Length: 392
Figure (cartoon, rainbow, N blue to C red):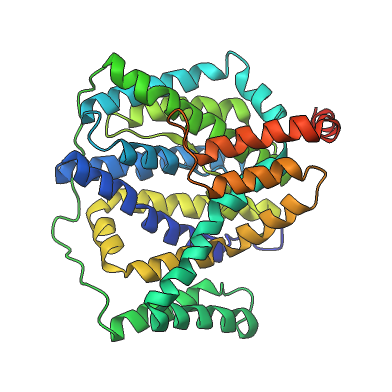
């Protein structure tokens, strides 16, 4: 590291934009499930507060960018379930999922999964996962040309004329907020009832809910989130503590779910943002993760304000902010997908991740990894085996 260690504030700001934007998912589900304000605020604590508090402990212990979050794909899955499963049964099934994840490490399954998951396929999934956010910016450009176009123009000019230590996304978002305010697209925020006391829900353990929810959550937490993120960390020269991450994910999911169903895990897009090449000096990236974890804790502590903030900022500006936040991730992932030694598997992973494929209750990101592995096994077995032998 250079003389004075410091976080990459550009990555922290990008992570903040994403964390606020993701709030829309549990808010939509809370409305469909008929949750009270207290239950909604408690769920936000389980999604943001507990995972990032655990992340702080991991980061300080290992001095690595190990940012745990509430698994966004678990949130999407719960949202798609709608009111099919009662709230207390969702909590019970989520607790069971945490227990299953906790058992994976003693059974030795985590290490085997990571050893056989090639990095190029992970980057194919990553590129496919973030590309829609980039594309959405141009969809919003057609609806809000002045707001989105102005924000994008400021970003591009800042990349050229603003000194590198100031992240280009900062003047872009400030400019975007000014444009939105001038055009009257923003709304005010009330500071009444800033703090909402957590509400604990007694879990109900329904066999039907467990069979419906638990297997999908386990796959999303470990196979789709933790394993690819650990592979990404290893590719960036971090010796990620696999056993500890899996155990903390399991325990965090079990206890965090008492406040609302959550999947505590690493996140591949978040890990790419705070542990990748754009996140500052290699030995300082844990500070970037630490600052991002602080943002998550703040969102949980000020859940009612965070909810209002997500609604106050125009959707087009939020979408543009997320797109600008993931540009670096997308560029790096596409380079890794096309650089070999595997190409067919990563290409299939990339394409499937962009699709709406759903089979057996599992979405495109799961099948992106599964499909990529199958294609590489059939068409690129020798290259895959060489990569596997090299990582052992």
